[in-house]
Image (cartoon, rainbow, N blue to C red; front, side, top):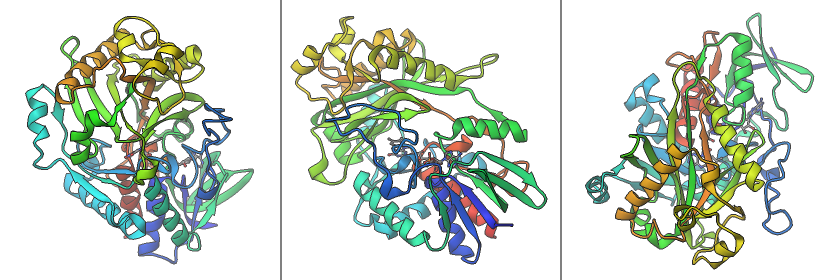
Length: 454
Ligand SMILES: Cc1cc2nc3c(=O)[nH]c(=O)nc-3n(C[C@H](O)[C@H](O)[C@H](O)COP(=O)(O)OP(=O)(O)OC[C@H]3O[C@@H](n4cnc5c(N)ncnc54)[C@H](O)[C@@H]3O)c2cc1C
């Protein structure tokens, strides 16, 4: 065998698996294959000046490369079983939290010391929310910030690079079963290993589906979250974000009984494009460094859509909606809440006239031509509900960017150690459909590394 273990994907799942393997058995021969660039070469060409919107690079530096989709993220490590994944269903709530705390310790050791851990424990906002039919979920959140998150990744890479062999810009094409292990095929070469950890995240979702089909690994998929990113003056949410940093608030709509939730809150942050399989959607991040902060806060409002038989392609449904916004706006569309309510599109003039400066250069348009009525109604209801705990949310100038889609990878059938029906073949992180966050994905990497080395 060329290697004892091959890891596919150098996102948080793959990185933490490699790190933990080295902690327990540094003599192991480990290789990491990554479709994207090494960290120092990851650069999104959008500079807001010459290149204003996504040009669909072959390897998207926001989603791929050392650090994975999380490299330029806000670096919010949510330590909770309430959201971010269902790892606890496999290993129990206590163990899942223990692993997430362990990940937090490593992040602190590699440059995150001095960053703040926020918590909802004992907050008065829980009462305020419930009084307004809103539900604040419990969590502790370590906010590294985009800048410190990058430093932590740099330090972890410096620690790993002489212990583990990295192959960047090397997308794995296929995994084949051979006697005593696996053959991992990339760039016309076959690399063999005894055990293989697959951690390809969201950008590898289509490839993961192919692998599961080829190896006959059972999967299921029935969920996609669709919505908008809201941007408003930071002062509107300051009373919440100063204390909690991120608040995950859930609302059940009166009209349809659908659940709408806030997601990925970025105080004083920026709205950004995200490219998933060539479709431009929206996301957000913020910096720890006050000099890089903006005057706006952004967060997503998402409506979870669960499908039942016979429909199976929930991600395809989300993609079609995102494609509509790309078709109408050439990318992401932005609309003032006041324009949406009045049933008219936003124009460049109306956006310019607003008392808020957008942090993303998106096309002014009409989201009601893109989002299904049921989803849009839910979002509007939630904005009015949030206005009661954060007055100003429903102001005319509140900006809505669309669409934001949270794709869920199909859930792969694995055992409690995230091992497939093939001994030694593990599927972890967001690519497994079990995790949807930095802390859960990282924890899943630690879990399998411990299983392999025990
Ligand atoms: C802009 C943005 C902001 C975010 N902010 C947060 C946040 O603040 N908090 C939070 O909890 N989560 C956040 N997330 C989500 C978080 O980044 C992911 O949940 C997390 O990165 C998942 O880790 P992972 O290792 O499973 O997958 P990923 O991070 O997606 O890494 C997978 C890696 O595999 C590589 N790959 C894919 N296919 C192949 C292949 N065939 N061969 C080789 N390599 C391959 C990809 O290039 C990628 O680098 C954010 C995501 C984005 C895009």
